[in-house]
Length: 98
Image 1 (spheres, rainbow, N blue to C red):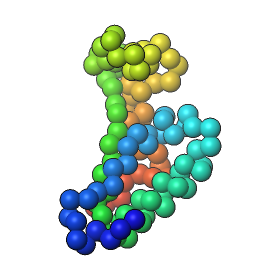
Image 2 (cartoon, rainbow, N blue to C red):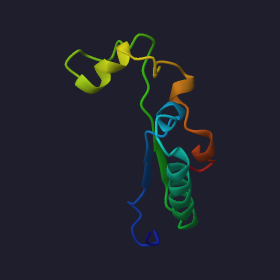
Image 3 (cartoon, rainbow, N blue to C red):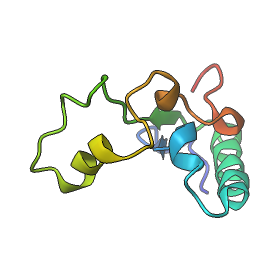
Image 4 (cartoon, rainbow, N blue to C red):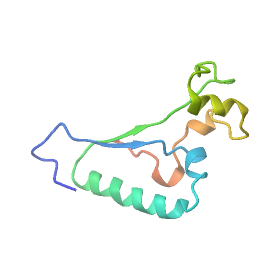
């Protein structure tokens, strides 16, 4: 990763790393170790780290039937419509300054 002292418009986006999502991975520890190293490299290089999560209200009222990906959530046993589901996985959660 390049040093961020010349390009102030660069940031690392850490997306979809909620606990619910990470637990669905086959080899979640490989993913966690990899992304932890990337996040730490960005922090060491003074690059902003921005976390983006997807969350829904109870019953998924914001999901329209035309959305093939998210409409499946309404019928699954995995719940993305809780406050807990929107939390970033504990080993990669944001730190002050992120």
